[in-house]
Image (cartoon, rainbow, N blue to C red):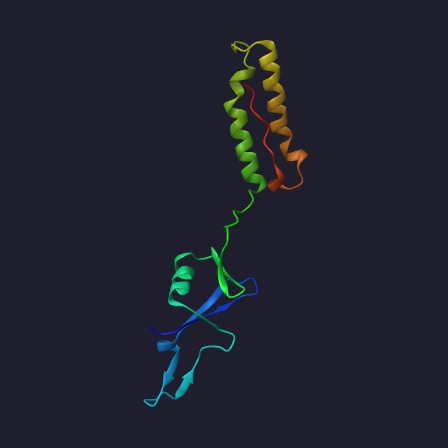
Amino acid sequence: MSKKFAVFNGNGFPIAFYSEDIHRAYTLDGELITDIVPPEAVEISHQQWLEFINHPDERKWENGQIEVCELALPSPDWNDIRSIRDNLLRKSDWTQLPDSPLSLDQKQAWVTYRQALRDITEDYEFSSEVVWPEQPE
């Protein structure tokens, strides 16, 4: 099996892979005549190469070995937050109807909850910081 090489960005994520049998040429005597593997490329094992290939953006090179990285999910934007909020409000509309089976105390708990939902876009500066109010029983 031929040697494998990888080039990594400043964060340790692979940005290019090279294989000796494709990117290097030798004479019959074993003399290197063509080498397009960049000097900054690091030799990696076949197993390490497979690990990077099978887990894109989930593995990085750190201190000469592969480290597992958690994929960071993107923060919801304000449109996502409003959509979730509006859906929660719609689902709780029934609690405010005059013929709702709730007691006055229960109804007031829902009023407070619904107001907290409406205030979410005012109470938080960043959408990633939103903490949803707890729904009443």
